[in-house]
Length: 257
Length: 326
Image (cartoon, rainbow over all chains, first blue to last red; front, top):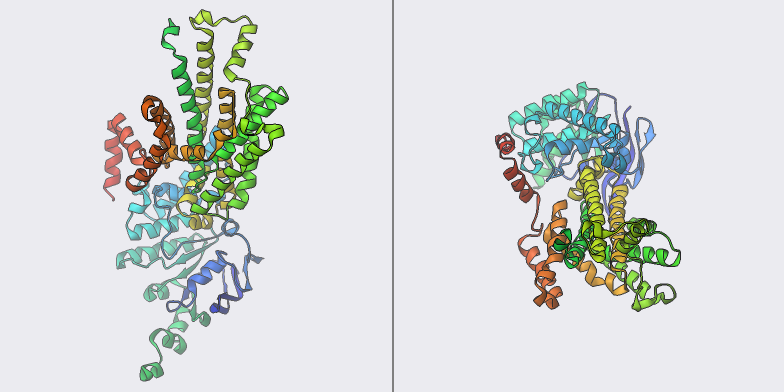
């Protein structure tokens, strides 16, 4: 198991965003995290990457507890994420953005940087090479010198994925990667995520685009009001009565409305 | 013949410009990681007093004093930087401004060592020391057609120029490296930088400390160029003055701080008749700049424009490949 989520709860003041959520992600799978708005999906991402810690519960990555570790340590261990509201480095070039992603896989400090030692030059060359490969993968290599804030929405989303991949993650967390994409873009995103999986990277994805989720994911967990509602293969989820109610509202709701 | 061209007064102004450039860069480097520190005057004072006291009381060579001054400022920078990291934006600015005042008051009150508000005089002058050394080994500036004091000021200027070139070279190289990218990413989006595996605590303290070292270094140089320092030299006015260098010249690029320091040091000399209104003009400059050009006179676009003019051919290739896709 790559990631074990054990009884995670998260309270913000009196509001519980997550209540006793547990699930396991196996190596190499694409795992979907879905649920209506406000179900606690992004909160789960923030807890995994320790933007804030859980109120209770534990998270194990490759058998090691990562709860309470600093975010940059978690990235170093091999979990990297994208953000729901894109968080690129807006005034940097496309290439530099991806090279920043490789930060934790390189080590040149001030001295080596200033005196441009052989070690630093080689490392810089490697970082650049790796960044170019990733830009090739997400089809942005033609515009590597552009300033990232000038990119289209879909391009920015793909750049974020490339930047996250530059940290050589074992587990990639994607927060609504298809949001705001048109059908063609979503189609190429599907291909991209499949390619990422083929590289042996496990993917945990939050997404609202149901056709994409059903087509892409090996297994899915559904959250509703911070609780785990269901877990299973896309087929099982599609036929789960509770899930359908959560998304479409139950018949009782309609009567009372 | 050389002597006719060298005016000690101009050399003195040029030397102040060079010291101020280092101070401007101290703000720039801290700011390049997204932190606004107004403690430069305080760190400058630390460097100046450390070096002055060591060279006077312990007969240390000037170079050792200057290095010690920069180091002490740097160590204090680490100590101040770590707790200050919890503060962001304007709160950090206020805290560091407070730190500067504490340092000044400390110099005023620790009279047994710092001679209080009177200040320290007879600090070994870097130019004169070098001149004395050379003279003892049988050198006569007359060979170059220079008077003694012309030679002294020329030495100071050349020395500072070398130091400046080194500092600028250092910062440019650092900028174009993994460290520079880490600074820039923290400035642009701290949360994203952290998520990309950047140890933001380390890099923020690093940037803050580098700023402190540069300020302390400039302060120590200042002490040995002026040969006299007093707490008033490192007061609130100085902090504002240093801030103006970066704000006016441009806080996003190295050349901004350099231009700002050069321009703002030259102006009061050129416009002697209004130099009484200096601080009033500084205030006005701050307001006008914030309203119309918050990034300062020189920013990345201005630099691009210069580069394009110099290399028209490259511009065509570069520009077209960019615009096609945007």
